[in-house]
Image (tube, rainbow over all chains, first blue to last red; front, side, top):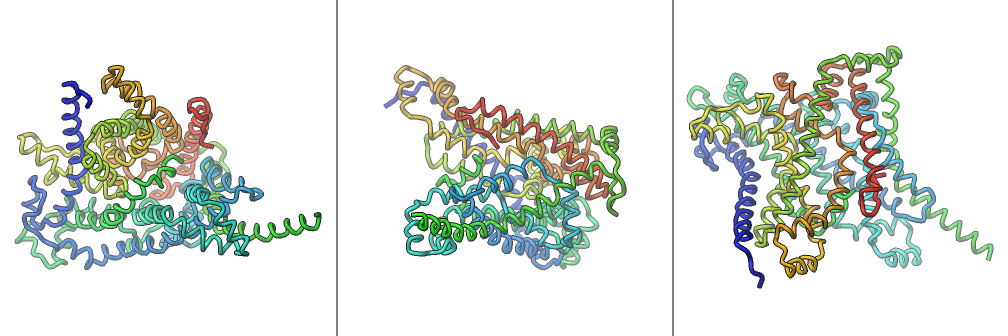
Length: 298
Length: 307
């Protein structure tokens, strides 16, 4: 057994304390928003309590009932549900072409999809003009289509395909299987772990889409959920008149009860965090398995 | 023999077409959304309004841009944020990984890792929203604590001089756990025999960290540092925009080029000025990235480059 010096023991204690404090700093802001989302009364919010005093689900009710909140939520669901499988399909297919080492002209793909776009790009306005020309302004498809193909994701998938033993595909080829069959019957099933990880990450990407929505979407009913969250958190804080109107619409008498203004924003943020919290254990599994480390390394 | 070869070639051509077809959807999408927009850079040299092209004007837009105080303000602030990024945000995950590596209680180490990685998957809108509520003068936690201690409540997000520090803190809060994953993985790759030898030679934990651990992950640090230059001018739109909401009180320290491009282009419809700023921005990034790419040949052990 190694002997530990006094200095090391002291360091260990302080290190553990420090890490504990660090964890609290990460967790408490999130718990604080959870509390806000369940707290009805304004007067109860100015404490350090992490659980609600005046528990209420009224703000979650507003998320579902208020059309201006519900529509953006559904728009984000649509973008995510449609965008994610399409992303996987297009990138998984393209990666198969890139994985063929003996293919004539295969270097072209890396230049075309990774290197040149990294060096030159049109920028915000040319992108906006293109969308206008395509008639996609104010359309949810403007948020989906441009980000479907990704040279980086194809490279990541290609690296994974390379780790699949050649013997598996060779024997199928000798049996007369077409490339499409090999791809669908051998490569895709064997790539499940990396496809799941990529699917979760690109799904979160679609769910969290913000910048593109700020550029291409003008009508509030076409907003994505993050855009609406930002508007609610920003505008409701301190805008008493707007808040009163909303509360009256939700069936409360603002003169009787001082209602927690950060509640609706809080509830919306919690709703936005839920999918992340749900898929998080799976993501953890893939990170622990080192699958996505390659993507970080580039 | 010859006939056999001919046949073989034919088979491969047939297969090839199918393989090539599989990447075609990706190629088309890239062509439309990356290549068709590339000539759009020329708008920087044109008088181009919301109505469309007016006339060529050479470098007039650049002259106009460089004469604007707001542009230089955004330029300066962008570099302040980049400076803070390399001074504080990028070293933070290395320090976290080193400290976590010293934790011997496995379940505790795992919990810290799991919890700290979570915020990186939240959108900036939610992260900003969380901190707007947390720092709120009336009900936010921080101000409740200040009030309990008898201090004066502070409107944190209304003070320009605090903004760069708050944003830096939030960027660390969001990203430190995720970024530390790769350093922890790299720490796991350091040969344990080195530590055993060092302990026999009487090296303290601090000496082990300085002479074994840090050199062991040096290559990872250098590679990630070099790779980071490719996105150096970007990534500030979402954090800044979601925190400030065009609050011009904060422009003094918060306006960055990314937001400036959005405001002039999308909000005000000054297409030429926005594209000019964007071009200026990407010229700087490209030069920085190519230099980093050149340097990485000499700085990394395996002579790895970005391109």
